[in-house]
Length: 91
Image (cartoon, rainbow, N blue to C red):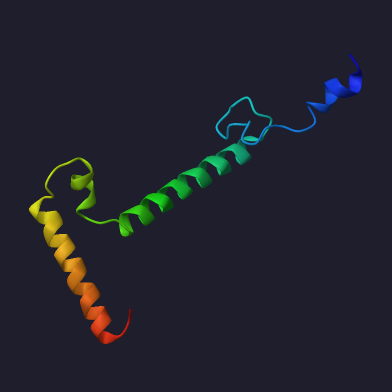
């Protein structure tokens, strides 16, 4: 075996081969905490965006159920607000 082939495979790591929450990683505690905070913030932002862009009837339909009265009212209000904005020329 030649030495150059053995070391070549260790030159680059596989993407995402390190876990951000790994305590045995060679990062400082501050960097680990910062990475955890960033991941939590991104997760909250993604959840907020899903909530804002979702159809109130979708969760029930996805499970094969009839949407609740409240979900139907939410959908109706949402449609009325969109219609009002269209009439005002804001959409």
